[in-house]
Amino acid sequence: MAGYLNLLLRLAIWFLLTADLSWANILIGVTVAILLPRGASNPGRLKDWLQTLGEVVVAIPQAYAEAFEIMLRPHRYEVVTVDRAKPRRSPSLIFLDIFLITFTPKTIVQHYREQGWYEVHRIQRRPNP
Image (tube, rainbow, N blue to C red; front, top):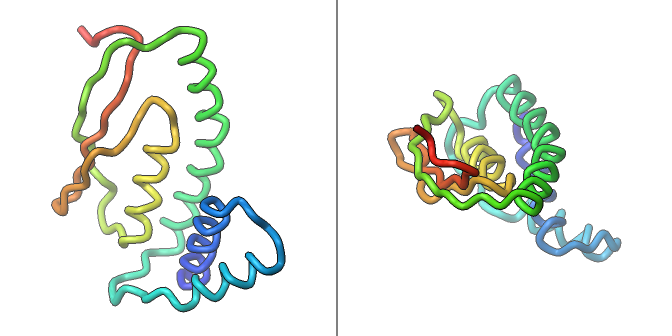
C-alpha cells in the first residue's frame, strides 16, 4: 500500500511542477514516477501516511488564511526554531513533513538534521516575550 502512496506522491509533485493535466503529460508523469529509483528504506506505516495526508488537506485552507493575514497585517519579525521530527519517519514522510511546513506562507524549513530535527524559519507579527 505504501508503494502506491509513494507513486501518488511522485505524481502529485509532477503535476504541481508541470501544471498540465493533458493525457500526454499524465503518461509522462506516470512513466517518470515508475522509473525513478526507489530507496531501500522502510516505506512507513499506513497509519503515518494517512495522518500526514490528512494534515496536507488541513494545510491548504491554513495556507490561504496565512497568506491573507500577511497581506492585511504585515509580519515584521523573524525567528528560527528547531522542531523535532516525528519518530520513525521514512524519507518520503520526511519529505511530506518538510512540504507541509514550507507550504504555509509563514514558515520554511531551512535545514533537516539527520538526527531528526528541522530548522524552521518563521515570520511573526510581534516578537515573542
